[in-house]
Amino acid sequence: MVANNNSNRDSIYGLFLTFCLVISSIFFTANKEINKTIFVIEKGMSLNTVTNLLHEKDIINNKSFFKYRVFFRGLSNKIPVGTFAVEGKVSTKDIIHTIFTEGPIRLRLTIPEGSSSAQIFLNANNLLEKSDDYNRLFIDPIFISEFNIKASSLEGYLFPDTYYFFKNSSSREILTTMINEFWINFDKTFMERTNELGFTVHEVVTLASIIEGEALLDQERVTISSVYHNRLKKRMKLQADPTIQYLIKGPPKALSLRDLKRFSPYNTYLNYGLPPGPINNPGFESIKAALYPAETDYLFFVAQGDGSHVFTTNEKDHLEAKRLYKKYKRENR
Image (cartoon, rainbow, N blue to C red; front, side, top):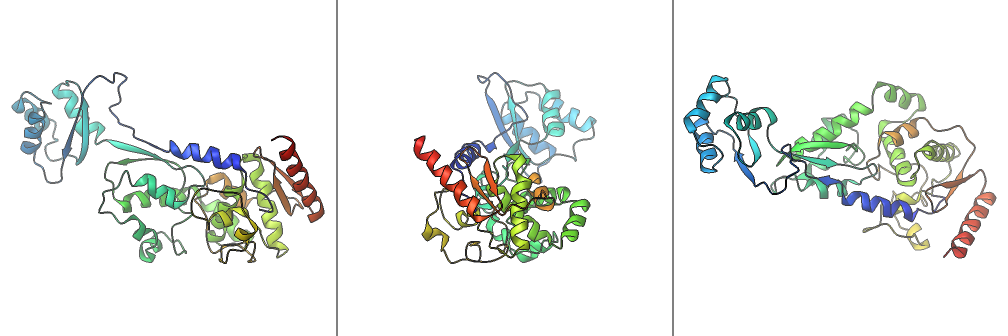
């Protein structure tokens, strides 16, 4: 904002995203030399068909014994669908446990706070079948309205968390899970506070996304929030750098004067008030900070390069804080 976006956040965030999507098999073993056998049970497969499949894959030796054990346990009509894996030689008891108790392979998808939906799509594509139209649902008004979201897209409502999905989960299932998690966290207390502030849920999420884009230190979130609340009350432009970064394709960069003049309703250097919608998917702490700002008179802040900010109440002190930071940078090159 009123501050220079910190490069530390960008580098840390970039490294974090690199490790966001981790394949997590429920059959993990420390011995990497053991051969893993993958098999797929498709919808409509009978017990006989599954038995033949396992025999062909050399997973079971005695087909009759396998079918007898499955039938005896009352599982012959409860065959799950999905991709499964076994490692090494397993007993009949173990393969039955794998299929009917542990279930199909699941993939772990970790969404860091502040991830854009484009970044989530990139990671989630490893889970989705190629035929799934993820982007279509993201802006589908009928689908969005099913979740009582009053917005033109799902940006901001895909709650950052760690999720476990079956391989080839549909885009609808993945999005539904993330949106439901948002509403679990945006509970009745948050709704009451939203009404108390005179905000809409969409405005809260939008403000939270800006806070998420600025804050690197958790303890500063409520103070950053107070700056934006104070500027909104005084009808000052928010001048939030993350809203400009949102308009620029590619990795974050140092903003130029030309960037600050980009024509867009998201440009908070040109327009008053909040932008039309969230610029990322904020986490719980940023949403909470948007709802419960600290009580301050601050109107400005400037990044210090280490994740922290200097907060000031007037433009004179703000410009001095910027000057001191630039001097510090020159002396420590």
